[in-house]
Image (cartoon, rainbow, N blue to C red; front, side, top):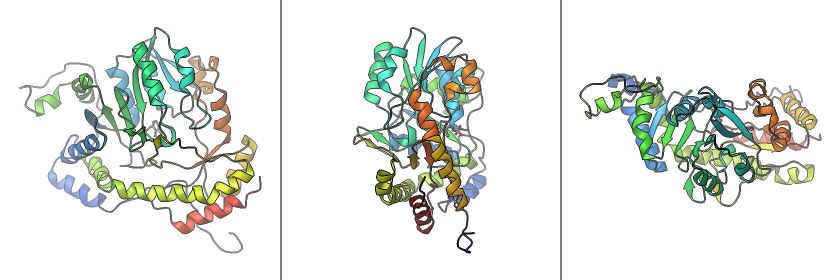
Amino acid sequence: MRGGVYVEKIPFNRACFEGKELAYIAEAISNGHISGDGPFTKKCHSFLKEKLGCEAVLLTTSCTHALEMSALLLGIKEGDEVIVPSFTFVSTINAFVLRGAKPVFIDIREDTLNLDESLLEALITPRTKAIVPVHYAGVGCEMDAIMDIADRHNVAVVEDNAHGLFGKYKGQELGTFGCLATQSFHETKNFTCGEGGALLINAPKLVERAEIIREKGTNRSRFFRGQVDKYTWVDVGSSYLSSDVLAAFLYAQFEVSEAIQAKRKRVWTRYYEGLVDWADQSGIRLPIVPNDCVQPYHMFYLLMPSLDVRQKFIQYLASHNIQSVFHYLPLHLSDQGRELGGDKFQCPVTDRVSDQLVRLPFYNDLPIDDQNRVIECIRSFDG
Ligand SMILES: *Cc1c(COP(=O)(O)O)cnc(C)c1O
């Protein structure tokens, strides 16, 4: 209740439907091919391949599984080191830890909250096997510097591009820099099928083995293409392909990708314009997008002056029936991170940003009136 008027809750996220999801699911069912790699999966593969220009695309059950496939493909083993930002989702590193890797946590830049490439070279050792940059909020990492360091030390780069689909760095699509990149189609991402993901493959030599690992270690994909006359167990692997029913849902969203991105751009821009003068006066930092980055409008965050103010802010919005949420807790200081020696890494920017950051309600169909209510409420917060 506010001023005696009931106001409906504005959630942080809401799954949005673009219209053809159900029709395509019905079509997948009538196609009679609802397991993996059916007609809709193929449409999703070609769509992403064409839009991004990568060598191959494989839909997976999640971004987490695409990361696990990456670790298998790179042959990560006990004692290998993998460099990741401490400010990321658990799966970015857990996928490699599952294969025995030792996490090496790198701090982030103050502006984009992406891994700080100036700290990268000092963390590389003869055991470093991979660097996993995360394009936070879909704003590109400094890929020129990262690729240069990786190439000079012969280290693989796997981009965790869960936030960054259709973002660009210096005119090049995010997800096309590393030998591998991973996407998420979880409900909270720009494009969704509930739970889903994709592995983008940019290094041609990794394609065949990626197909095998995704198909339980068998050469089933080659068999279906008529390239071998029987299919059999040829390598290690697991079951990482998603049902064509989910691919049908996802394709309905891909087909209107530009409309989805336009909606998200509208939401982002409205927040920015509605808050920029207030933020300036209140010592609050809005997202920074460098000139050479095109962002895909994944989220809108604020950096508050302190943890205390951030917590009061979240409570204040909640008291007005608006849900806002913080984000990653530093992985190097998590229980599992510490157990793996994470607390010996210094990530002061991560520690601070983790306390200060808050994300505002953001989804494709966030009504303008609701968004105006959020902006008005924020502007009335006086710390
Ligand atoms: C969402 C997310 C993931 C995990 O995605 P799932 O599809 O849920 O496995 C991994 N990394 C980042 C940065 C994410 O935001």
